[in-house]
Image (cartoon, rainbow, N blue to C red; front, side, top):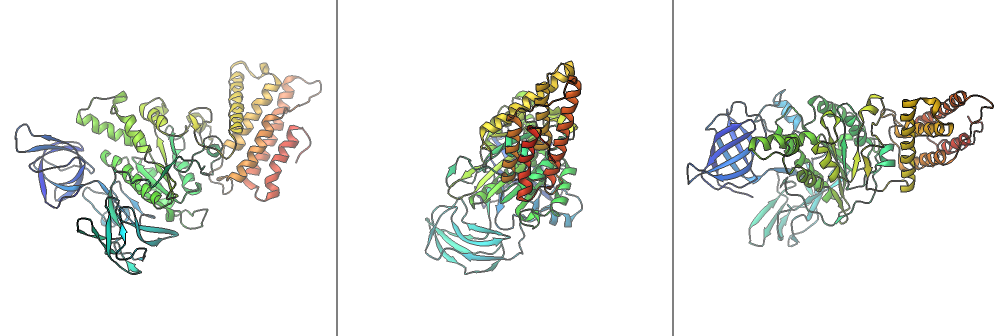
Amino acid sequence: MNSNSKRTGSLISIQDSLVKARFFENVIMGETAEILVEGKFLQAEVLQVASDPKNAKAGIVEMQVFEDLTGAKIGDLVVFKGKALSVLLGPGLLTSIWDGLQNALYPLSEQDSYLKPGMKAPALDEEKLWDFTPSVKPGDSVCGGQVIGSVPEGRFDHKILVPFDFGKCKVHTIIESSRVNITQTVALVIDEHGKEHELKLVFSHPVKSPIPFMQRSIPNKTISTGVRVIDLLAPVAYGGTVGNPGPFGAGKTVMQHTLCKYALADIIIMAACGERAGEAVEVFKDFAELADPSTGESLMNRMCIFGNTSSMPVAAREASVFIALTVGEYYRYQGYNVILLADSTSRWAQALRERSGRQGDIPGPEAFPMDIPDQIKGMYQRAGADTASGGSLTFIGTVSPAGGNFQEPVTQATMDSTGGFWGLSQDRADAKKYPAIDPLVYTNSVYDSFISKEDREQIVKTLQEANDIDQTISTIGLKKVPVEKYVLYQKGQTIDFCVLQQDAFHELDACTRPERLQIINKAVQKLIETPIHFSNGEGEDEELKEQIKTEFDRLRLWWKDWNSNAKSETELASLPEQIEHFVLQEQYA
């Protein structure tokens, strides 16, 4: 979608971020436009095109505006750009922080302390020099998506690609190995119609047109996230999808920080698509100072962040998600494993609801658009693994249901669209349990774990039985619970306290890799499977239960200490040994 002619219109209606304009030349659905408001151009996107009932020679276009329209008035000039909402792809994406329209935030901050409508900044550094090495020569045939060279981007090899919408072309000229910036031409190609095209290190791609897979495959390789409850009971594979719902204050942001630091992926993309401004600012400040535990380098060297907060216009929330998705697809095409964290898809859906209401569409449940399940599914379907490139895009979307109600439409549609689900519990969060993922409620996964399915089922069964006994104790009291049931309850409490909970701020306990996880699972299975016979002579049941609790408390303290300190092979092996002594009720240290 490109047009060199200048096509204009004028505003005839303004309703918050939704406007209408009259035009007299061709306008295309989905193209971008700019509205001149008080000397500044504000970016918009065409949603609908219709005939003008008052003027047969004119048409009416409906647009959503991505910036604050304060000061706009009827008659303001509209300039149609002739291209779809696009993202600039190329070297320099990593380490960058943008707003929801890919304006670089740090250069914007140099213009003004506050983000104001109409402010613009280059998406990528136009002065930085990159060491370009060509991989094709004059006379070679190339097509869209093919590699013509590469530049080093930190520790990554960034491939320079022919834009994906190009057909078959022939390389006319290409520069030799040299240092160039993103504004310089590196190659000249000629298409089948004899038209010349200049290729640079960067190119634009429409954000609502998915970058194609080379060879799509079913996600089957499990990601080590470092979070025990996830890797044990609700794992995610490279190229998989996960919904992460939870009420406010349940720990979604802390979990995202943990995943950014410890998930074994090449690249992490954060899309703050409507997150509260204070939390987004905290991310911008903290991540620039954090070290990547895997490399010792700055964590930002493998990250990029879109900071589109809840204080920004709702239309920009939708744009930020699609821009982030396209960047993720771009790096997947390059052969890298990418994790996209979107926070929060609820506010993205709320933006759709507001736009739909202003357009007068028939509302669905809770006034969301009727097609909200299809829109959510379409978003998650852009994730996936690519066998040919070796890359993957894993999409983890947080959901913020009002009042923690998992039955609301966005959460339900997310559950239907994703392969994994990490439901956060307000009760567990209030009890200071981190992560507050409830293993018994809305927590599931279609992906393989690092441990067997049978072991996973055994753990969940034990936790469920322990939870049922806990309910019984709360209802009729401890005295009515048989000793053997009380032992089972204590086993479940031990698994919950020592395995499912972690210290996100402890250097060792914050991250558990598969080898360590398998040792923990071995100990857990031994604890679950083996009957434990406690003896209290001729004492009363109450005394025996107190003794049982004391013994399990000692075990839990020892296990917690092991989580925080065991590093060597000998120290790691001591956990299964300790459990062996415990279940046999032998003396142990």
